Image 1 (tube, rainbow, N blue to C red):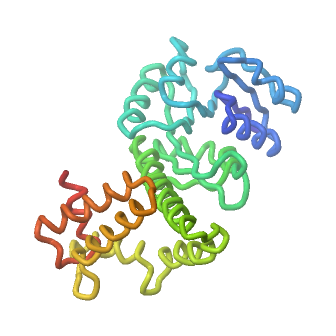
Image 2: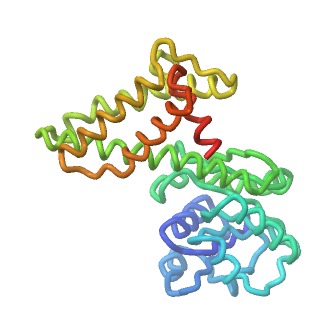
Amino acid sequence: MTQVTVVGLGPMGSTMAETFLAAGHDVAVWNRTMSKAEPLVAKGARRAASAADGELLVVSQIGYQAMYDSLGDARLDGTVVVNLSSGTPEELRAAARWVEGRGGVLVTAGIMVPPPGIGKPGAYAFYSGPKDVLDRHAATLKALGDIAYVGADQGLAMTYYQAQLLVFWSSLTSYMHAMALLSRSGVAPKEFLPYAKELFTLLGGDGPMGFAGILAAEVEAGHHPGELNSLHMQAVGMGHAVHALADAGLETTVPGALRALFERADAEGRGHEGLGTVIQSIMNP
């Protein structure tokens, strides 16, 4: 049995505490509004005396400032802080120095499932920081999901996390635009769903529509062949999509920005290359 203190009892933190309890760990809980601890105490958790009460602190709060506010001036000698809060990579690197200055070690993390998925098959989190420290607590943390260690630099976990969320948010927002456009023609979401599911699957596959892998290979090679499907063609097509949304009386801010990005890459003289050449414009704003 491992003793673990969960700091932050919102939906994510509360589910983490419940998951640790179900795995048989000795769980203490702390929240700035301690009334949120009552349901967990009823399930067997202990009330932590402070946010710094314990040798393994698992933090799940709205951001890193909340960790600073919660821990205050407390010493963290011998304490391992595993923070799964959101932030920027630079914030996490600064937080690592802050924790180290108080005698502790920070392991950063980004969990890639919503609260209902914690501890379930398919759950995982990105972790970064000292690997030997993470390894000591891996058996405990695996209760939350698989461990994807991405490196010693504490900013890397959040870099991977934000990268995944960019794909998640932009893909699903585009899907919402697609459903809205179809709805204007009387097509119900359930009628389009099979085609959307197939597209998401194909994009991650190995066939001719497997553009996740195709683009990764092109970017790594620095070569974006466009003989069969040029960026100029994509920019024209994106313009048509934006006009279709506007004609249907729908929001076009995000698709319009995408069109502008395609047109900029085209205007920079790379319209004869493939879609992957857009990354050159992204990396050189």
